[in-house]
Image (cartoon, rainbow, N blue to C red; front, top):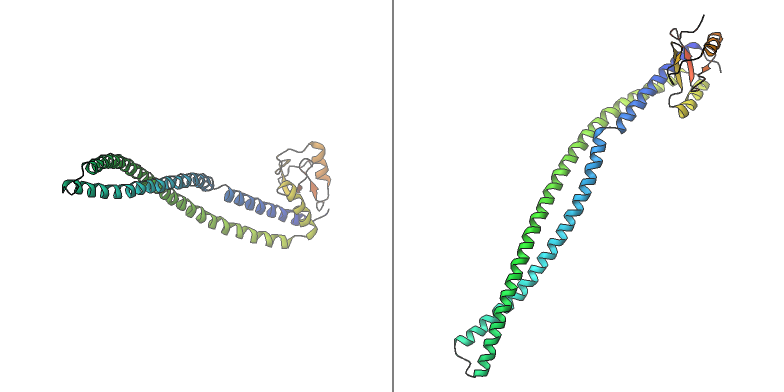
Length: 248
């Protein structure tokens, strides 16, 4: 392939722009906030799962406490009614009185048991309420931190995207100045090597950083100025400059 030396030098400018674009894209994908956000989002998911589980246990405990209260209310009412009948002397039959007295004793024991159950249920509700509130607070604090990191990430994204757009606009302008066959070869090589062209500087390819051997250097020196050279090691387009260090 042939290309004017000036076009080959412009190709180095294009390669430099592509390197800048690649570096900016890498920075965009490698922001420290991204990994931190991902980690915190996993923590949030775990925290949310714990919160839902605690809320479910709290709902169950509240239902248990409500059932105990529902059992207590009629038992207390019945005890009051029975005790009143005993106290007012309205029951003259000894057997009926004994039966009522025994029922009062049974109700008293049942109420005592239900009141103990109610206290236990209320304690469970209190403990679970505190746990849910704590988990809710932790989740909100975590979400505030995530939102802060996302805002910082988005700000950096905006700066990087602006710079990327500028570099890509410059790239388009450079491409328009170059011969289409040279650009096509460069793009094909870039797809394989990352950057499709490199300068030969101080006898070394700046793409793969390997020094050319003497035979290759002599061949490079003997090639016509408009001949497009390729690095023997990495296959990139190799552009000669005044700093190539080629033998006379």
